[in-house]
Each structure stands twice: as structure tokens, then as C-alpha cells.
Image (cartoon, rainbow, N blue to C red; front, side, top):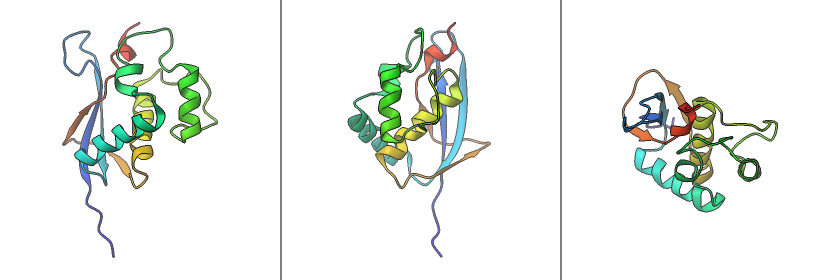
Length: 132
């Protein structure tokens, strides 16, 4: 039998630094990848897509969070489902879904499950998710 080591990780969206609107959401997962492996998987996905979700897409408010051309790239890469219609990314949960898709794209061995508690933090941006 193969035992998988699970790492507990907190994914924070919004103003994680607390220097703006102060609104955040936290999502807790257990992952088969370590925090360092998650970081490098994300970096590989940015290279593959040419789009940095954290710094280019969701730092500040805009008319739409995920531009249609970027959504098309993500669908082609398998990050989001082809059945999902634009606009997509209006909620913190959808934002985290895409971020987790990046981790999978960067390392296809990535597996995770949602949990109720935390250890290991990733602040993934999404400041604009909370600005109207």
C-alpha cells in the first residue's frame, strides 16, 4: 500500500496584507505537494500559459476579472472546464479554483482535498474580488 504524505495549506484571497479594504477569504486544503512544490508548479503553469494569475489578473478591480482571451487560454490548457461560460472569476471560490488549476497544470500529480483547518499559507491575490 502506498501512503501519501498530505500537507496542510491555507490559500488566502483578497487583501491578505491588510493594508487596503481588509477583506479576505481563506480556503484550506490538504495537498500531496509540499508548499515548495506548489510554488514551483505555479511558476511552471505561468510559463505554460504566459499569464500570471496573481500579479496580472486579479490584483485590482476591473470591469471583469478574467478577460475572455485569458479564459480561452485556460480552457485550452485544461485549467477550467470548457462548459464554464464567461464571465467567470467573480467569486473568491472561482478564483481559487483557477489557482488550483494552475498548480495541476504545473504538476499533473497534484491532488488536494478541502479541509477545515490550516497550516502553510499562500496569499494568492484577488484584491479586486472585494471592490465594487
